[in-house]
Length: 123
Image 1 (tube, helix red, strand yellow):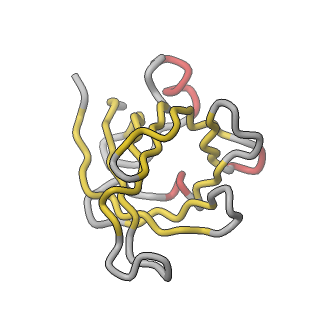
Image 2: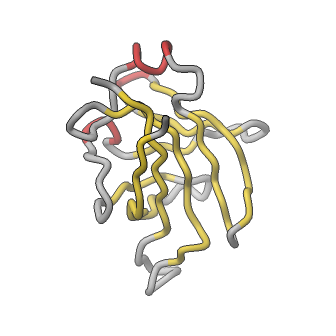
């Protein structure tokens, strides 16, 4: 069964943030299956809130966008007013559990690691 979840991801340890940074990250609303994996494209079509993304920096909302499925099975984070989408590496294979990691290729062209810090089922 597919249910909407709120997922919070924060910047994990990388070259620019040796201790990670809880003030940099993403909030996502995603349809997950019983195994906490991303549901198929039909779940996005049937739930208007599915795929909403909020990017935050310094704890403040920086951009609001949408997660979209693209060619070749790639999941893109598209933000209004930004010409180039961010790409989530192998997002369709991830299990959305606290402690897991997701790599996102951001506007600078580099992949940055994000740690899932919480998941909460939405009503």
